[in-house]
Length: 246
Image (tube, rainbow, N blue to C red; front, side, top):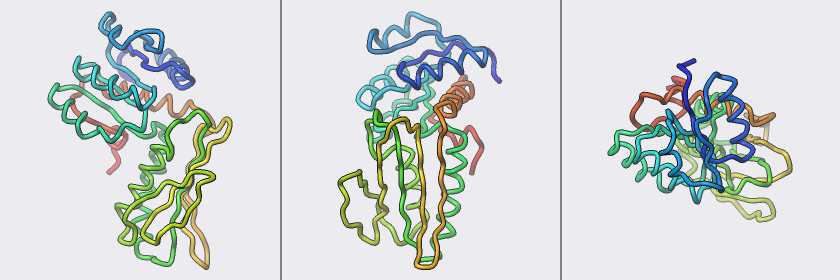
């Protein structure tokens, strides 16, 4: 573990509270808590080694830009803002700042990602298999499909000659899928931290790769590990950088 850090939380919902526990368990200090009752500018009033941000897509961009402009290393757990990623990446480089992004901070999920990419490369040779993705999350999650499901789909598409794009199919909105489309089926249920499954199916058999989160602790731990890793670095990083995956 790195030296003791002062880590600020931006967002204090269920995930923020779980992250707070991990911060304390690992010998760090919660430098500040930013939520709907105060303002991101309050970070300038405290000593802060890093920020962990879990909010909503509509405010995440503002929070990221603020930290980048003030050279506060930031770990972003919010998804649904990636249409602005390239612009924010350039901003990070311009300000010699540090940004860590991931669609999922669970170590297990990132092992799932690694295997998913390798499996898709193998399956590209076997055109008789059709691939689908299913994701289930709690009802409070705003974006669908999840960022984790999108990452999973993009990894598969990077390896397949037969598929051109992924499409979102939410519960109750089913429709036909073209052969060159990769469907992501999204469901929202009570008390589901996160479930993702990739299924490759032929007339003969099927292959499934899945990850099922039992609770939020894995996500929280991964984000704190990312904050520890990010301090004293400059640039834009993700879980592959931290875990050393190819």
